[in-house]
Image 1 (cartoon, rainbow, N blue to C red):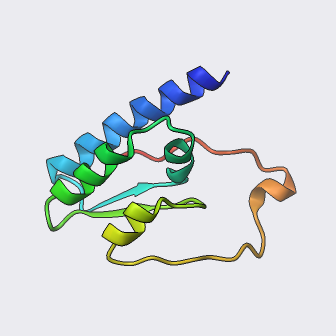
Image 2 (image 1 turned 120 degrees about the vertical axis):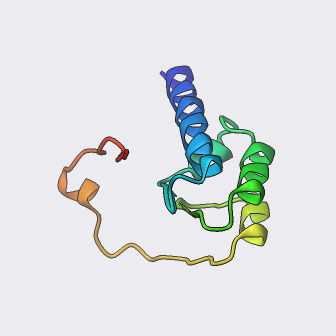
Length: 100
């Protein structure tokens, strides 16, 4: 159900936010994070504030389509990728996240 998915996104964001701000990781990857932002499940301002407050040695990689312009404006690097092949098209289901 969508509310459950929204809650999972919020819970995941809180874990990621803690990792970003702690400074213990040098890289935090938030795969497909733009979708919870687009759906309104995550507050954009909280994400922007977290990115701005991160320790300078912490790199954050955000992925997903239709990235909010505010994040693009804040980012150091923005890349647009073109799909050539995707595992999902071959029947490989979505995979659980990777955590340290």
